[in-house]
Length: 236
Image (tube, rainbow, N blue to C red; front, top):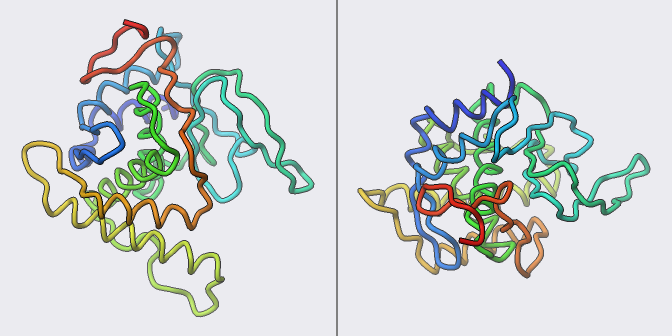
């Protein structure tokens, strides 16, 4: 089965996506039905709204297992000498994966859900800040991961853990605390993320070096916009 179809099936049938239902200040409300609607963008055949899937790790920034890139936006690509070169994506909206078997583990599926959440915000054509964009994606990732039975993302600290890994662990544990609180309040409608929770997410994300300013991922998918779970022509 192709990776495109695996992602489509995840979006259509994975019950743990139902845990992702929240509203955060400064960002669009994220609902399970939005992920179901996004499923139609993944196909090996030509479709009018398509998100491509590529498994060549050369496109992935160092340290990431997956990455979503909106069409015609700048992308930093790491060169053989370690330097970064900015290029413009021409292939269209694309999910880049470090390996085709990334969906075989709960960690991998959660990482893909993170990137699919970026794709959702792009599809909704709602401009948000970089850090709010990442806050929504990390929250969705962790809500999914815990619903699927995951615990601590990194597991137990290693005796010789590097400073960078320790810093990343602390940041993700701070976001995990927010996710557990949001998950515990889940009800029939979207759970309201408080301003304090939003700030905690943004502060943790800041340790990863994400910039301030607005995200460029608000272009729609192939000339279409997702609104309330329904696709409509962009501009209408």
